[in-house]
Length: 260
Length: 198
Image (cartoon, rainbow over all chains, first blue to last red; front, side, top):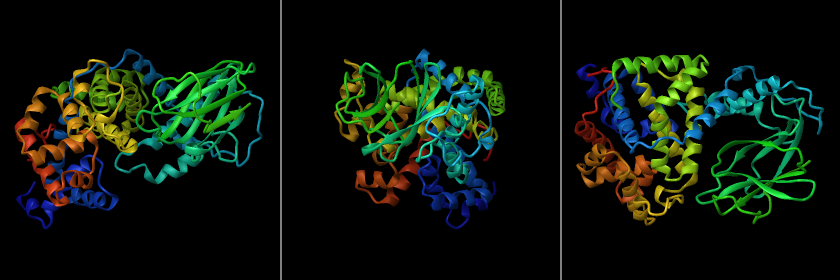
């Protein structure tokens, strides 16, 4: 660092932007100014490292709470399916797909396809220094279920049912994928946050008309993936509920629905 | 947060392996930092279900972004902490709710009992979950600096929102936060952990 770094015009103003910059709260224009200044000003870089260290001390100083044991397998499973292949190899989905296709993928191949979708969706969710911003829309196009129906990348040869969405989920889109046997995969993109104290609740209806609550999603803002392990499914629905616990029956009309 | 150079080197090695796709190294990293990530999530969200979802999201981000980790810029602990903290702030902002508004407290939870719903009380309750050193350090700050930092770090408010909340000009809030961080740095004895710079 040189003594002159502190004396550069506008240093104090830039330094005051470092805290929101470290918190990821700056608008793009100010963020770009900071990045440019950091390239040439060592005093600013040192200041930022110290702010990040204090920020991490603040954020990392909550009273230690052990993570629930079940979370470990949940996280490792999520990473296992996100492991390969690299998103750059994701094929573009075909423009149109038949409503149903005979399932003929071997399970490893399906796992690979699912991994592709998951890793891309995970990457899309990342917002580190804006480095991935340029590729987001392209990756999203390559992996999300097409609105007109059809399969996400990697599932072109599975039996795929397009989910109809409405109301609060009008902007969401997705598919119910019959992986094979009793295995189903529900993938919904652009799921909005249900808000404090609310949830999205997922229901299945079997051939006897019995409705079962199978999942509650307490957050949104991204893609939700749910595996279903049951042979007798005629319909899958998602309802908005003013509760974070499983309710015995839907209290609102489904906002996402797919009939098989 | 204080770790030896050997620990930091080992963790940086795990990160390089994770970036190369090594799931065993990822499991090591998870075992080392799972409590840290979950503590941030539960401390800020105060809801076990949301905290678990948040923690899982953070770990998937760690996996996907491992190649972006720069050991010359920050330690693994700082990097993961920053990732987790930013993610939870994003969750708070997306949900447009503040910590004290959230359900999920256990009956008899002393902290929960103190949360009445207003931001001041909520922020105070969340900060009560902080470690003793940080809590004591925060209390040494002038009120404006302390409140600005608490609203930014615990509630995910932007500087403009803090300005509105406190009824202070935006420029004043910027100064509060910058000076507050500097004072915390001195009080807590936090230094550039990689020993760079001045």
